[in-house]
Image 1: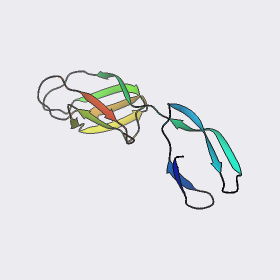
Image 2 (image 1 turned 60 degrees about the vertical axis):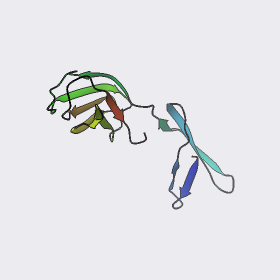
Image 3 (image 1 turned 180 degrees about the horizontal axis):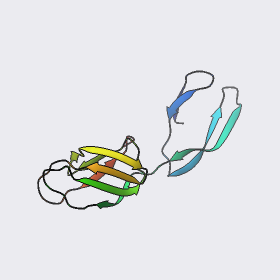
Image 4 (image 1 turned 90 degrees about the horizontal axis):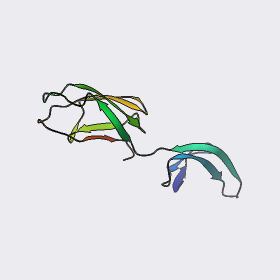
Length: 118
């Protein structure tokens, strides 16, 4: 971890450094130099990516249920349609999100998924 705080003899919290997506080892080293490694204990996840959404059209009044398919969706993800937050967001899995669209002016809109880590 790039910075950490020891809460007690069994718990430490911290912030991970940036890395490429995939599993990585966690190594804890005491002040006296003793260390322990837990292989593949932390899994870096890439940015959310939308592959498709269905249906691709909806009424300007909103309330259309849409299924987003993709990858790397966090269970706390937020979804924006044309810059407005979705009326409801139900993350079904890291690969699928069901939303209810907000009211919006007619025309094409950008669909954006943001995980809590940015």
